[in-house]
Length: 425
Image (cartoon, rainbow, N blue to C red; front, top):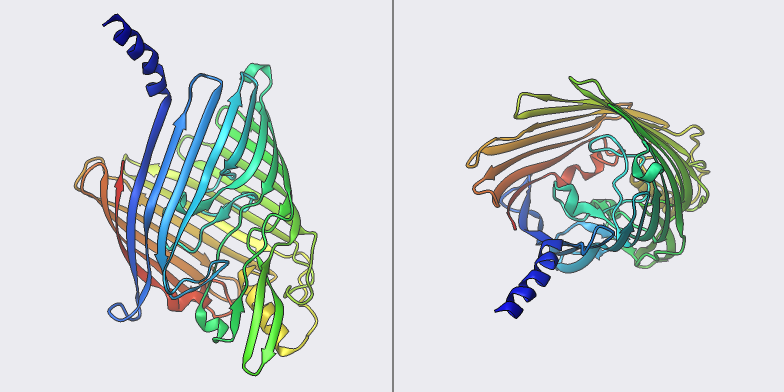
């Protein structure tokens, strides 16, 4: 009995040091234009996460995502998924060591930079799993293989902290293309990742009701450019290859708490270090992005977030005219990179209703609108029914609208209503 008691005493700290959980989900989306005839996408999978912390200094983190997907959309870089495909990806698989002043972390990591909600131009290192038509950010955010060192002076008591990041394998964002754009004459080759390393410096200040950070970044674009690799005329076929251009950026994030509301702002300047005449639609893709807005809670159940957004190309010039096929490739990249106008301004509205009890509906509505010269908008209403604390039913819509010359307008035919269920454990 004494030996058994001793063994249980030794095992108890290990059990307490391990935390884990996850989520099972499934969604089915149908087109709003033909809900009974056409499926947009089926997706489902599991997200598993765990942390093991044997003491105050060491921590091991894991987050894996396994999902299956079937869709008639053309996806980059996963190619055509109409027949259905399954994927397993690690968002996190990292080891962390920390002291009072330092934190060293290495492995597969996720960054979440920026102060605003929804649009984060200063989140330079993150990629998005856009091939999943879901509304939950934790399912779409993609990690990178990296090492980071954070230093907080005065044994962790200083309001200042400094971070250095080295990224060995960069993250990337999948690109959604309406298959009508390709007109059945475009084929896609696999992308080549991880040729360029990334570096970032981040300076943080956390004060009473006010905080900001500055980021310097040097790496690659997360949304790939498509370059022509080969072509044939009989039959007509254009083979495209996704590539990543080198760039550097400066970012500034500010948040100020005014008690009744919170003001948030992000400013990002990205300078392209590579240009490709046969792929870039404009000669100078340097870009400035600005987001400013406020967040306010009303009562215990309601939260509003209103933002003004915009981006600007300081030296906007279209690339010289070439042959028709090259111009077609440039126009696709113009849509993917949001380079269709020199300046575009817009707004984002997010409203959330959070019930205090079970067996009630939870509601979220988001409306992103660009309205300079050519309209473009994405409307996303979502209802969740909290059947139990762990089991939720949901219905949501992804409504794309706008001019065919805009990234959102070109996806108009893909507007869909989704039905889903999720189990959290």
